[in-house]
Image (cartoon, rainbow, N blue to C red):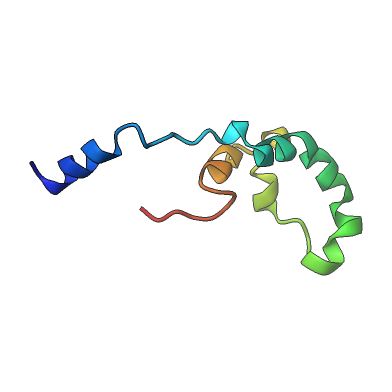
Length: 81
């Protein structure tokens, strides 16, 4: 048996697939993103700068489609393969 096969056998029953849509973070973003966009300029722009288009692209309500992959990879952290 190869090392990879042995490791796979040991890991059986341990791996749990991620379910980003079930996380509190995902639900908060889903429920409050529109309001966040509305108040961003007034509350945060002076400190953090303008709301970048890439952030809007993360939310389907604003025409984006990348939010799922953003949440799935840990809230914006890039995972190198």
